[in-house]
Length: 194
Image 1 (spheres, one colour):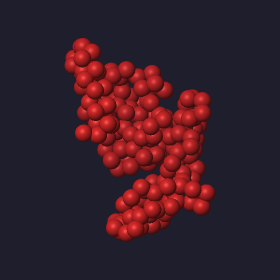
Image 2: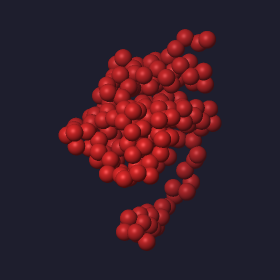
Image 3: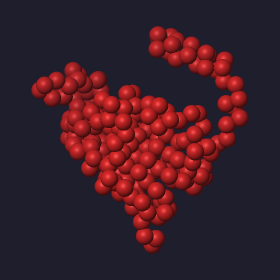
Image 4: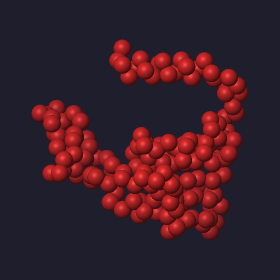
């Protein structure tokens, strides 16, 4: 076993030993909201949004982007599990701002090894064995954090599967202060019913 695996299993054993009545938590989130946010390890939605287990759905992906799969999860959250409000929360200093589709495709074509970022840009240490499949994926990178929040709220709002009266909020988590900063232009309120 790896050291990481050992650490995770030991932490889980300690957690399970104190699990208590958490087995009684209901399936729907108690506070009836969902958060779409980035997978960045510096973000802890439970802490920055004051969540306890069972409170809310938290959907995470690279950049906290409103991909088809993220929208699928939000719709399930609403339709089957009763959430009534959603948050799109991106963050400062996001790695998604450091590349574009072409860069990612080139890095993957070079090799499947981990790349590194230097002053000269992304460097791939690989010596072949890459894949050209990366050119067929929209990696949803961005250069303007606020603009990406606005676009994601608009993309979710425009889905015919999203109720017209469901509030969707757009925020940026500041990695330097821990604060959520509203992107007012992303304020969706509700759209006119079709």
